[in-house]
Length: 218
Image (cartoon, rainbow, N blue to C red):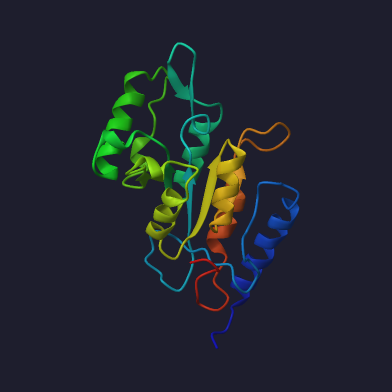
């Protein structure tokens, strides 16, 4: 049996204190999690034994707002939030509906999405497309459109051994993500942080697998 270091024990205690402090959030869930089963690691360090977290977002009304005149810009706090995740080297992705006719691959559909958003963008800061890389998941068919589970499943598979977080503005999407093993958070609710606190996500990234295996649902 692999010994647990004092550092790992400390990280686990800090993380679970934070989770308990946020336990009243109706849309926050850590499915199948216990101190022995939770399993984030850094998505870019190649460590298969264990530490990572990847954050996926819906796009419209989660990170960007479309006004009545069809202009598009960041929602308040979104650009700063992405910068904070970037500073901590936490990878991000999008799980978003677009017309399947926009392309035959995720890359083609993402390219069209970028073009559409950028054409109507009015924000002073351009949208941070480079943060998302090839982690933009879009429906290949009408049957894959959210809230069908297909996009979440594909995104989770792409995350490998990482714990996955999903943030969106609609209850049904948050619930679907939770049911598929995501730590789900509903954004922009009065009285709650606009987004899942970065310090909590960072703590999740340091929480090791207690038994060297993936969490339930992987």
